[in-house]
Length: 307
Ligand SMILES: *[C@@H]1O[C@H](CO)[C@@H](O)[C@H](O)[C@H]1NC(C)=O
Image (cartoon, rainbow, N blue to C red; front, side, top):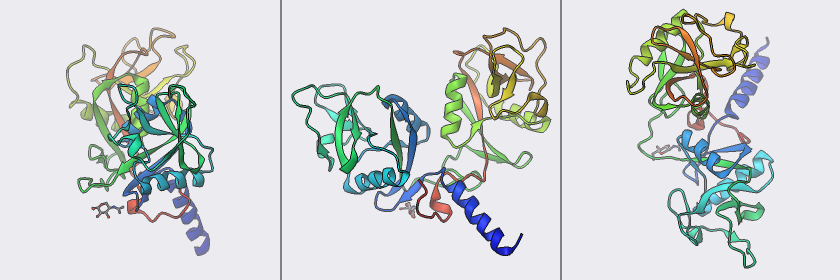
């Protein structure tokens, strides 16, 4: 490759990588990430929560402007949800941070004598409208910059619970809050990683060791990992990245897998062998993150148009 080509592909690569992340806005004193795929309000709230951010509200002029700009740059249609809703009693609309809607620098649409819906969306021109919480809308997560934040350079995130492992080249975080496999999947994605995929014996040992620190509060030992039965037939286990099991670590525990059609979610036992479980069972889990993925643009130069 010529020098120009190398430089060009580096720039392109950086551009692609940067588009996934939180983009800093000086005036808003924090990072914004626009989610184009719509969700109901509560789900949007939880996604931002799992990202260690909040569903953004236009609590001041700078944030209002930053939100509008982000939507325009992303070239998506208004409305989007904001992190503001009716809180517990009629007439009390507040942001997640506790700012009253009436104190925000926004205009309102009239509800023409009808009781306003419980959630709030932002329309073009920055006007807000009362919206049913069950609508599916895009939204923005906002992470405020504070002096307490310390960047985890090894793992490309502010989350200090991710630890780099030199043997595998990945970062890992043990989640000590038991959750269902599907929520664990969501949590890991929100953190910029994925439910751990055990590639080989080395990684299996790494994960077994990490899991030694899990709480002992559950009557079962299985922890979630990143594979499942894509056809509920006990024959179609693939990783969450679609890899065939014979290309990754694949030693099942004795007599496993069993329970066709019910136990479709993958996990690991304390002996390092694989097992599977059903939908509603909560367990501890490990998230894996590629340290090259920088979630926040503070540390890499970020061009315009990241959204
Ligand atoms: C975040 O705040 C800290 C402390 O006020 C500051 O030093 C840092 O530059 C800020 N981050 C960005 C990306 O501006």
